[in-house]
Length: 232
Image 1: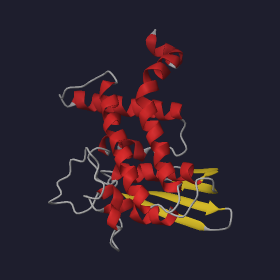
Image 2: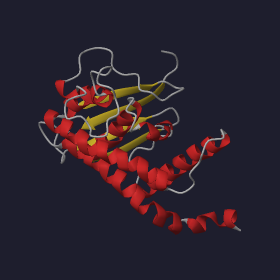
Image 3: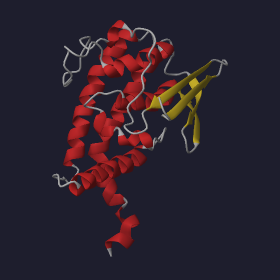
Image 4: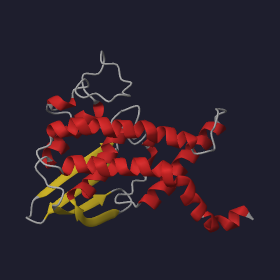
């Protein structure tokens, strides 16, 4: 492994407990360098509550790649309550973020990174966001970043002579598939949960996945005045 891109999530609980997760990504592809030791939990098998839109071939994939990479983290939080408070510190190359919040809100952005970088073809279109990771983002920030990412992707397609779609219909289609994954993946997490923090962390992600395409057009109209210099 040479010079991976690293994201560190540190969780410090009010009782003094601390959990630290080092997420390593291949710098050129943003693919997660998964845990090498141990066997994932049974609920991580590809056929266990498999997502309805999963395109992976069961003959070559014994495990759901997202579940396999999340297995240890889910087990670390399986007894945590959604009401429990935690101080979350996130360190990336450029800066450090910190916030006191509930466990689900602190866990959601970590789940988002792993779900996007583990090799799930449905989640792959969201991968560019990881390099410019913004934990604890508001809905407005997420909409701006997602629309920007999507349009950069269309710009790159256009530069390579491929068809490009400049409306947000393509982004809505991406999120339609992502919400299917979120819904079906929650059934896996219920099988691993002893309390509700893990499942509610995924619910938080799903709320954003549902809301982004719904509010994107309206939000762009609201911020249109910011771009007056570009529109004159």
